[in-house]
Image (tube, rainbow, N blue to C red; front, side, top):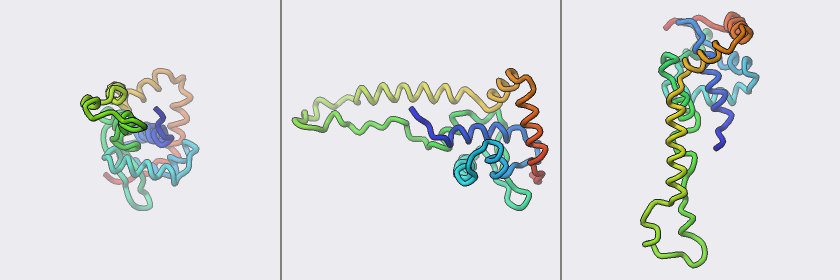
Length: 166
């Protein structure tokens, strides 16, 4: 299974937004700069996160993005579904019923075994993503950090965090 680059960008952006103060916001340009990605591409994913109710958009010259929920309430699955959509990664098109010399319908009364196996795997994959919150990721990062990552993030937020009223 291959997820688009937008999933990675969205997860990292949500993690960065989790470090904002209560009144803080970050612009899309600042988030794109921090991650070294295209602003226009990132905006598409920030809009998807906003549409899913994971981030809030604050308009105006001091506007930007901030989390709409507590980091412990945002799972990796929430972000993946916001960016990639709710459809399963595998979609059975019933190719077993095509080709030369097709069999009668009585051979296809049960769901396709390939489709059933893929959907079981998808269910397990989604269950694992649902178990991991942004707060969990940040805690793991902090546990492994010797201080360098935190210092980089704090310095960036000090320069780019805007204060907006709630």
